[in-house]
Image 1 (cartoon, rainbow, N blue to C red):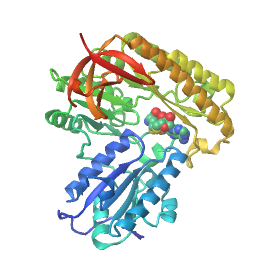
Image 2 (tube, rainbow, N blue to C red):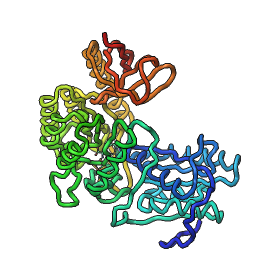
Image 3 (cartoon, rainbow, N blue to C red):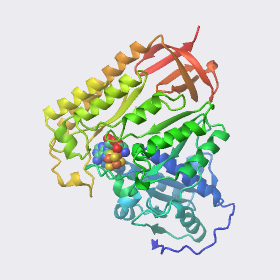
Image 4 (cartoon, helix red, strand yellow):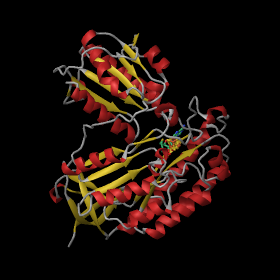
Length: 453
Ligand code: SAH
Ligand code: SF4
């Protein structure tokens, strides 16, 4: 491996070089960063491969949030990279993203197949590193400890023609005690308003039907620029920019501490802003919430949920929950279950706690036995499933508007504004169309729609 010094002094001339594929692990933020990287690679003269196994350049944009998933990703990368190299010895394997930033030693030690290893803070330079590795047949490792001071990200190769991601903040300042994200992505930076406007208007012009604003905590948009209510201001601006247009605007993720009533009110009065709130609870006991450094209590959380439910009865609420955090007793876990039952979540992603080096919680003893963690996860998922089942039956017969965005196996499917996926017969409509349908039947966690009479 050679270490690249800061200045890259070789030609950035466009040349028809080779094909690439970007494989993404992890969250929507990561998917969006992959779309940005794909755009940059296109600008550099590379073209997108039709399929992963045809690509000359195979990029893995990784995630480091949980150890298990990270280990699995390393194994997948090693295996795919080995196979790729056997088939095409000229191919280039690139690993970047959060795992690249956090676990470079591990990757360098193990991944002999890796040609370019980069992190999260040198994103704009990755295409040039790849070009150098491709042209000069050298192995490169390149990192920056801190993200660039100036806002740089411009341009995305959108992987859908219907739904687009639009990141509005990068990084995170919250330092929840279990989480590596602030370490891998740096301090929170808000995208300048003019750039958001430009990007959003261009998406509208291109005919996108829905746009999801992204950030680890969208509610704190603008805080780093001295705007305490920056997210409300942004939403109101968006309302103005898009007045009279048919488009849906979603946003993810809302930190429960920062979801203010004003935000809910703006969504309530809007025909563009979708009434879905992703509000990660993480735990239902005040003791654990404090150890997690989440900055709210169980009561604060439930008050926010009640406010949303009362203000916008059709709103759906999603969450993330971690079980088995250090010092979580059975009774703490019971409190989580109680909050889950009261909150009546519509969507939930559940995880077993994973100690991550460098985080504050890593210093706490990981003292919940593996068996107890598994059992709690199981009980939690069962509880959530029975909530979904009841909700599903209560929805049958309702008329909803669906934006069709997928087609597979003789069916099309789409989401409602409040983020419910509905499956329909293929003849029902085309991808990109909005359709009014009746929620007709449920099967497992799938809900099917039929024609409105
Ligand atoms: N910014 C978002 C979430 C980012 S990470 C938020 O604040 O909610 C996505 C989810 O992964 C988190 O909500 C959390 O539930 C989970 N997670 C993060 N670190 C974890 C860890 N060390 N162990 C288990 N789950 C974790
Ligand atoms: Fe991680 Fe907390 Fe930031 Fe979410 S808010 S990314 S959980 S530190």
